[in-house]
Length: 115
Image (cartoon, rainbow, N blue to C red; front, side):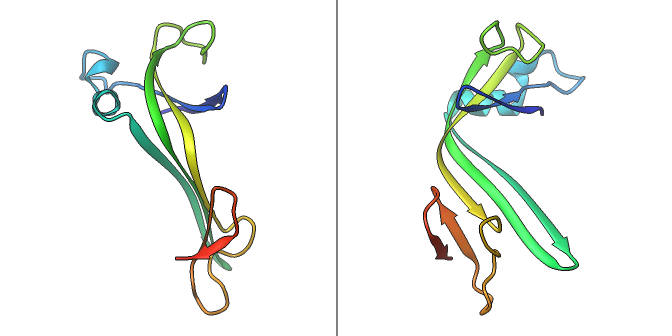
């Protein structure tokens, strides 16, 4: 799966496994058609020193065909476009765990909340 951004959305390319006939036969494509809500999580962890950070975005997803407007170098290819509606972040503005070991999460850019 390739990931890019375009016009306020996150674009996911739908690349089928070699044994399948086309992108519309992938589980990701089928699920996007059936339920137009999705989320993506990008996270990272380091052990020395221990550090945890990540981003989760959630929103509506739609199937588009790459054209001149949404073109990642492959026209005619089905793309999934996620339009973020909510965002959660941890470990960027401050440490994900405070001194008491409580995990803190920023929701939609607001103040950190304990989880």
